[in-house]
Amino acid sequence: MNLPELLYRMDDPAPESLPPTAESFLDSLPGPTVILQSGRDKSRTRALCTLLHGNEPSGLRAVHRWLAEGLTPETNLVFILASVEAAKITPMFRHRQRPGHRDQNRCFHPPFLDREGQIASAILQTLAVTRPEALIDIHNTSGTGPSFGVTIRDDAEHRALTSLFTERLILTGLRLGALMEYSEQKVPTVTIECGGAQDEAAHQRAWEGLCRFATEPQVLIPPPSDWDIELLRHPVRVEIIPEASIIYDLQRDTGKSITLNPDIEHHNFGVLHKGQPLGWVAESGLAYFRARNEAGHDVLDQILRIEDGRIFPAQDLRAFMITTNPLIAKSDCLFYAIADHGEPL
Ligand SMILES: [Zn+2]
Image (cartoon, rainbow, N blue to C red; front, side):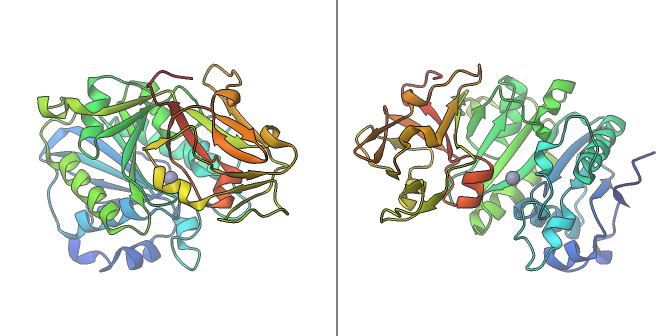
């Protein structure tokens, strides 16, 4: 099988040949890696990508453990370990991407000019050649919090895949160049956010999900009991403008445009009530924020309101993927939100 040479390739690695820990395994990899493992049914293949973000180790731990235990999968498996270089920067698993480079999970559309683009292109070529029946992409969230899946398609196959790992599914229409957009190639694909990168429960969830993904005879047919997946439709990304500065603190920091209460993280997937203060803003108020729905309409006034320099939800919101990391708040977003009544904003 001809695979892109940019990816370091391993074929059916013997368990005893593997370094003993996920860290030493990572250390042994020269760069982005593809691992092919033969299954009982060699006519079918499933693919699992992880480490698109170098600071999200749960998927890599699960892959290492799976290979080290020497188990035979139901179908052929293709494991893709993407941002090996970022993950290996000491101290290990600290860098989402290499400093000064693009986020690897925003690079899955042309042009594929820089190194991250070329890695993305090589991953897409690998998928085109190996033709998996399903693709899972395992991540960790930046803070702590429950697990969930993200998809661009809501159908039985995507729900079935999600249910191998978690019981919540976010449906998004946004196209950011993420790997999960591979659903458009008619390969059911879900992103799985296992929970916090430091969280033992997240590692366990990745491991148990991987075992189901690798060993179930069918992964695209949901058993009836799994139809109670909670679907969160078309959330709005709440961002801050590039000129705004942000800090997470219980006290107002008058040197920053925005001070957010770090406790906001405890409301991940819960309800942010209308009356609940979220923090403080400097004089430009709402102008520091940006919230557009998937149609591109500004819906900020349905999400936040400012009263005497304090920030409140404009209505009861379900918020999730809430970060308390100022770097992620600046470079990605503050949180995602839908109205508590479930209708898209
Ligand atoms: Zn990630």
